[in-house]
Length: 401
Image 1 (cartoon, rainbow, N blue to C red):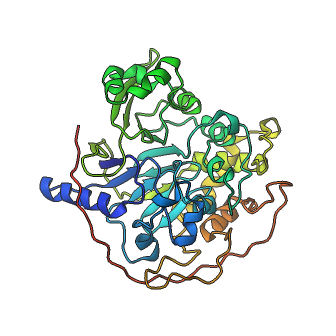
Image 2 (tube, helix red, strand yellow):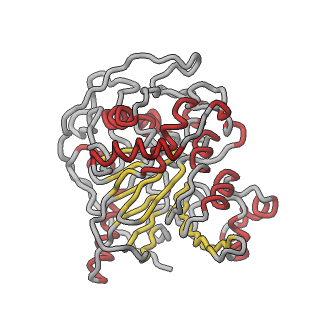
């Protein structure tokens, strides 16, 4: 299976897809999957930019809206995680994961899916110690504080990932696992990024939770972004001979090392995104302690019976052949000829999320009060497609190892 790995997307879907297609034409090959390591910027319309944590002068529509509206369809199946520059209001709708657009799948704040016979996991956001143990209390519209804290990694999501026992082939994180520079050419990295030296020496460059997950999960591959540079490493785990190949990539842009295409052994068959039984069983077990205020989760009250939960989930998923629920638009797409929209709900309930929770027998909690944790009623409202618009494309040069 040929997999394209991309660093920070920053909304430049057109350019990334064109670069992949250019590679396919030159090498007479076909890329089966694109993985994006965050800063995807799934901005659907102008209102979404209010939830995008970037300086106002850098707020642009970019090109995701075309894929959301249906004007364009991703030519390669795409799986992405969130970073620290996201339309956080939209990703919150898909907290458990789901289609952000046709053929573009968001792994959720934490998640695992299968693609072919590969098992792919990921953790969205970046690590900030002050928010790590907090619950998910942020709700749109965000203020100057919550627009940043909403993308900070939470202990709850990491704890769920730490329960995984079955092997992972690939893991995605936005920031790097702390200490990963010990396993690669850190000298050259410091020459390229001298301001990294102090943090590397102090063991503070990167994410502590990501390092814990790396040690526990031991995936074959780990891909990251965030620091806008290319860095490779190989981590050997103890004496069992297992090795994780790590690769971080740059943001999309001319002359940037933002894309890498690799071959991974896989069994023949249909390549499509499918739900993961173990992950959804874990999700089902821990949803009762989902922390929706600033208070941390209380894991002591979770009575784990993962095997029974897996059997229950398996029966439910077999009815759907493990396929995720279909993409549905919940707000209007950007229309370049009409800049004024009708009122848009701050927190629409995404039908994909509602359907998944119903399948798992779980309540919908994403509209809970960030103060009391009590729910508020907000209706779901799928909408129609947007209008066409053509953007000028600058073809970027593919970078290789």
